[in-house]
Amino acid sequence: MRLAPAKTNLFLEVLGRRDDGFHELDTVFAALALADELELEPLGEGRIELAVEGGGGLVPADPGNLAWRAAEALRAAAGRPELGARILLRKRIPAGGGLGGGSSDAAAVLAGLDAAWGLGLPGERLWEVAAGLGSDVPFFLQAGLQRGLGRGELLEPLPAPAAELDLVLLFPGFPCPTPEVYRGMAPYYPGVSGPAEPRELLEGLALGDPDAVAAGLWNRLELPAFARWPRLVELRDLLLEQPGVLGALLSGSGSTLFAVARTADDAARVATDLSRRGLPALATRTAMRGLTSAGFAP
Ligand code: C5P
Image (cartoon, rainbow, N blue to C red; front, side):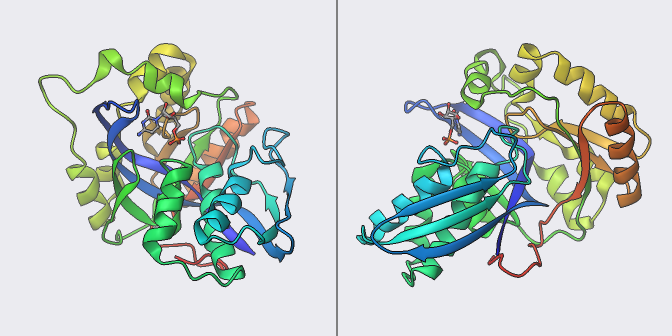
């Protein structure tokens, strides 16, 4: 069994729009303990089979799934079209929510089938295949805590933080399509004050100080997303009102919001209280120092 962790972005600055239509980012990715599970098995004759458990019918079990495309891209990169695989995907990460679930599944397939097929491709080749599948996929090859530049695919590992963070995830129940959020960025690029910097966040992480981390949270994509979906502002404010919550932010391009809680008990209580009010929420932790379950190969 292989774990495919979710991520959030503790910091995300959009530096500008590029000629290729993508946006230039400066972001801090953090892996989460919340993870999908995959079982991978080699098959012959170039057959790929995918079964999906969970995911509420939102996750396709066909070649449209990024996990399937990852298997195809890997065997193409290795020049081995005869390789096949059976992939069982147990979804735990909500789809379409800014938590990188599909990207993480794809990276788990790349690393897992590289091993199961005995390819042993060099890390740079895996990175290239990952970057071809999506901007967030390369992060998940190592996961943990990394700074992402370019589209998010140019990665630099960050020093292990002094402590993990206790988080509450809140799911608004509607999707925020990523391209639409980026299209709304036009009025919101860093102005004369210049781009935000993750200095305070990184100091807070190094010290294991959740108050400093909360003060250093930043996501430029909140501006277009909050303008387009005002409900997100209400839900962010609701998170901030909860006792034990130190800060709250949109996760990636949304729609998931996350809060940094002072303790694991605070996170659990807030998640329970919100869920009782009909607002789907769950408590989790970061996995910035790596997931420690068998099968996850950092
Ligand atoms: O790379 P990925 O397929 O995840 O990107 C999905 C969409 O998100 C892109 O088509 C683009 O509209 C937007 N995007 C962007 N700049 C990035 C990453 C994503 O504009 N750095």
